[in-house]
Length: 368
Ligand SMILES: NC(=O)c1ccc[n+]([C@@H]2O[C@H](COP(=O)([O-])OP(=O)(O)OC[C@H]3O[C@@H](n4cnc5c(N)ncnc54)[C@H](O)[C@@H]3O)[C@@H](O)[C@H]2O)c1
Image 1 (cartoon, rainbow, N blue to C red):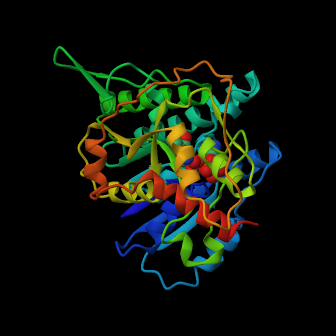
Image 2: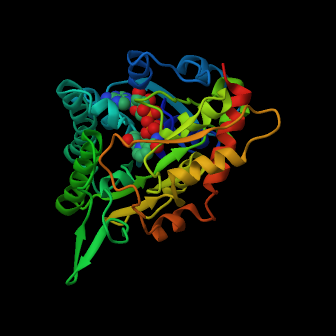
């Protein structure tokens, strides 16, 4: 099976690429990335708090294992229409795992320039893939797997189904309530997927990925050159990462307002394992949606989990509530279905308390 992985240098892409390489499935894997995530983090004056190695160093180590699977990497920009079409024409993938995007809401919300950049980067990238497949007559032969986000649902006052609301026997796709310019690029992707399926019968597997926590997987721990990134800055670090990093440094954990709003989360390992399993899903000419999360947890509860992880060696953990600068419902319950997702994961997902504990351990062991 030939698999094209976009964004394979990224936080989810790298452990997914590694898992595919180490599997015993007899795969031919081509990873692509343009290293823009490394550049963006530098641009906001930050860096991964776990040291990550260059793709050249990562691959040099990977080549030392006698792996059954073939793997290759190409530095390529997804927005380059000709290069993407040529790549697909030459490689002829059976599966595309599309994980490349500018994934930061605060970064996209900074200015008109950043908003337009994120829109072009994310949406032109997706369109180049979809249209290349169509123009090369491969659209019905391929499994197109992508990670959008649970953020496309917003915070509605009803239990969130997996992708569709049933109204009078019509399956109404729901994905247009994202709360940032980044999230709207993902809503756009959902619309493109819906149309590519409707017009061309393309088999789409849309993983609406929740806030992903943890830094390592079995494969990233195999070699010190395989470490995965950990960001805790305002733009690219999720709030839980900042909480964990601050708790280690003895800095207070600041909760905006009541902090009772629940958000969906997933352990990195579950995100990677379910994407890995998805390459074996049937080609079914449907637009399939999976809510890729394990639990919804409140920010206040996350802070408590971190506090409970304190050992005698750790510094004192202080939790403070401050005035919420955001316009948000501080008590939103976020009820979400994930039956389709659990069928793909094929096991009980890991607890979020475990993801947080693993993050803390990795940060303490791999930091620097
Ligand atoms: N991490 C999360 O919590 C989370 C949550 C929901 C959805 N997602 C989605 O999952 C996917 C992976 O997220 P991530 O956290 O690994 O992000 P990431 O930034 O770590 O990885 C994305 C990778 O794509 C590459 N990339 C971006 N634009 C590119 C382009 N034009 N050409 C080639 N490569 C390009 C980047 O260099 C990066 O390595 C993204 O689509 C993201 O929106 C992530």
